[in-house]
Image 1 (tube, protein in one colour):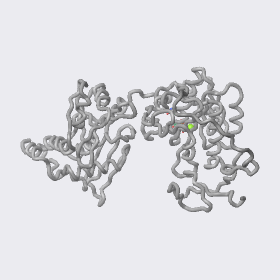
Image 2 (cartoon, rainbow, N blue to C red):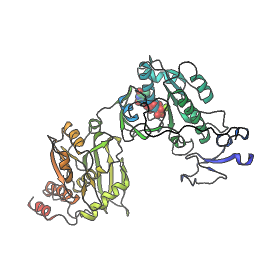
Image 3 (cartoon, rainbow, N blue to C red):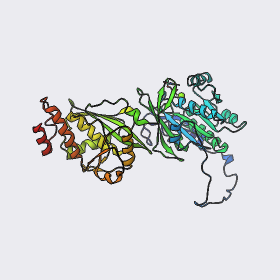
Length: 488
Ligand code: TYD
Ligand code: MG
């Protein structure tokens, strides 16, 4: 028994092993196993085992009414949108994100607004002193809010304090990695401690009906236990993301038992805290480089909200044996697919070129609908042909080179019209769906080949006089485009 009590636990995923090994077979991470005493966490003491017989309980049917999950608005519309309409009482939310991204700032703002609305709100900081938290609140202009503060790390003390008086409506634990409980002997920050502390706090939340928010750091080196193990225990997981150099922050639901997982909340980090961005399209398009080749505006959809964003591509001759493919904000496998379709079906030779691809503003796109906008940006860069500044692009590209329809065409078009765009390049079959939308010229595309021919023809026209037409980059240009180029 005593010999088995010590175990090697992966600090990334929580898998346990009898002996040390370099690589965790469960999650594939290297050097993440460390020795921990897991006896308290995983085994029940013998004297507690099999003491009483099981008691039968009543089983219920799926029909029948349950009260709607009561929601608590955070006072921040963008945060409520991601949670699905506010915090659910008795639910547990894990907010993850890189250090310094603004998790504490976001939660200070949310707790202050909720306290002002008259709720009992408790903010436990395990990382910063009370003075630091106060200083931040003062900087945010929220020092007058009646948030109850403490700098504590002992889970038992925290639960004892919270159990006194009226039960709190919201408890923030910043961060779960700093918490420790007496019930296990491992050091704070280890998987066993994080799991046991989270378990105790979650039990308190379920019992008292308080909404609980756990903050979790995400580190890549595996030194501090990632919040991975906690993800399975909580009701919702949100990740707070952003590019270091950018001021934009995006809150995204990764898991949500009480709401959608495709909504995003957009914030801007300012000197006075996080500012909500209710119209993200304006923000992502605010620094557009008008009229330069290699950029295309994608009319995308994030959850229920249409979002317009600029896609940027740079295609340059390579000096390497294997050309570079660098992507920020999009899946690299998706880019490879679009490049392969361009090469196989449209005669666009890209094997001699490095390709750099970026989504402006630090947004990360998951939609296949971005294919056509990406292809347009790539061809525009290669052909040195700027795309029309008033056009938006969307449509999925299949491996055969056909452009396939995407969902919510009218929502995308409406957003584009609202922001002053005059035309949309979209899949052919989407037209029926979009009838009734006014103000935007629809330019439907059936295959990627026709889109490429269109853009390449403009590129030749533009550069023919400068004697630098990018001939040769296109292996078998359309006859029409060739005639066009000669004429120009
Ligand atoms: P913080 O919320 O402490 O990050 P986290 O809790 O995720 O580690 O935010 C830290 C960063 O935010 C820090 O670099 C300073 C910046 N910041 C502002 O730019 N404006 C502000 O009003 C505040 C409070 C922070
Ligand atoms: Mg913090």
